[in-house]
Image (cartoon, rainbow, N blue to C red):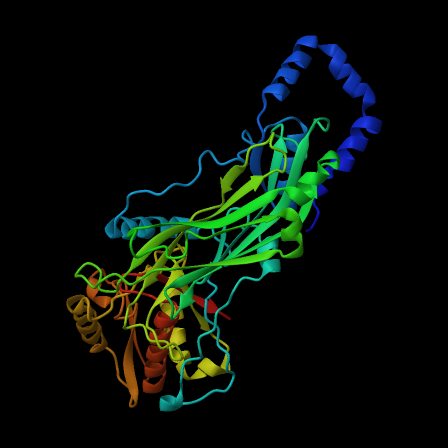
Length: 471
């Protein structure tokens, strides 16, 4: 742990005994009414479980400072107003909710524009010999999670990797450890870090938990070893019979056991629902969140439970998303992340399609351009041609009509942006598109790379995505 505060038990005690005894005495003698009120509040306070952020030192210091001043964790928003609970939801409702929330949520995310796939080859090739780079996950590491400023509220790095990290504090009375009132307190604290991973090729998600940096009050040493901590990954799916398989598992260990064996993994899957007209890709949505219960060794104190942030997982079995090396055309992604198709402008491996890259960059970034696809403008929306042949053909026909007004060099093809495989293409009719003749190899290889990227990031029909540029 980067001990931003070490829960400052020793520091608080020393400060109160040596740094400000006069102030404490004045506090006691200045107003018997206030003192009695404070005593009553302390006597009536119930033990509570709350979280302190891990990754932002300034925010953590501010929280601790306010706790020292007597603010309650509930007042500071450290205690959830309620536990997450299952809700009635349909596939249509979840689809609508994800599309409505995703853009707003993405504005608060870090690492926007980072792909979940990276090129692993630096050998350039030409024409028909060019193949897309192989699929690679870009997962969150433990260190990158605890250091990320968004980890305390839940950080989504890409479609396949998400994490949460916070300190969990059980205290009696509420506000102890750290607190302005160091006497008569019992508290235990530890850091919990959860790294969740979706998969391309499997309808499943893993949640990897780590508990470390355990601390307690001086006279609560038994709590540090004997407190039981139970972890689970709660799951709320749209189909109780097929979703959330494996979510009924939990693990309980004493903190002494967590200290010697700090990791645990849950694996949650979903059976593919039957194909229907409204669900051709056999999509399932599930809300998932970490749940933590702390049970101190003393029978005087009740076990308390709190929940981490909720994320929406989407699992699908779309057979048109083919990724080499994966036999099953299915996957699981974090639905509230909108991926970015990033063009590596100076990578030799993509030189063959540089004219396509430049055309799309010019279309998006030229002065006064209203063409969507690059933040902060609206994203693009994919068309899978077999699901909406009419709109796809409109795009193609409108592009061909516009290309007739351009001079065609030998060996060139007409390239359009936004792509024909998007609802923002030329056929939309608003004039917000660009056409340009580029070399045939550039056009064809870019089309192959786009198709692979769709599969790598599980871009289903009507999914949103952005275009970005890495110079």
